Length: 113
Length: 115
Image 1 (tube, chains in turn brown, yellow):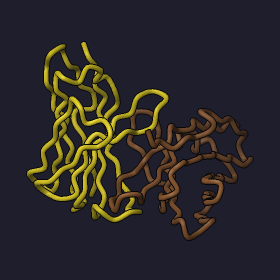
Image 2 (cartoon, helix red, strand yellow):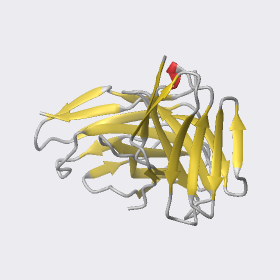
Image 3 (tube, one colour):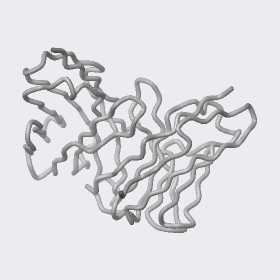
Image 4 (cartoon, one colour):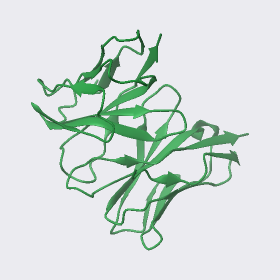
């Protein structure tokens, strides 16, 4: 089973502070990584991505960091807002010349006032 | 508005019954996917199709079947052979299959429950 491992099933953060979500992977052939956000009873929505040739990608309040040697991916959200409360999935692709994604198990983020 | 629609939102299946979940996209995407989500788990790939009239098994294809007769449609049938069908089913599409890094866009999902 190649599912990425998201280290914390849940995370609780105060509004305005930084949220850090982590994801470890085992397959060194992955070369593209994505983060998705999912609200209950809805489909995931794409948030941010990073290619393996980079170690950081930033988009507004969201920054993704990639440490290839450690096979570790993280998503930083700063400042966190209550609307960020959702389940976040990391995903990876690139092992077999398709765009199939391997998803992590998800981290539930709760941002409280 | 362009997007992916899934129907129905909720579906009930009786023992021994086949049911079909609909997925339609008007994004002109070549590739389409079906995933299953169970509590506490990530999304697992059931089937995918990179082009019309072609589809491939994913990681958990047993008990499911698909067809891709039209670019915009990718229905999933949950057969009676699927012993644990209760889950949240998600359909996705991407612009061009076969290219790593393509972002996938998801529909709202169908929750299947067994009576």
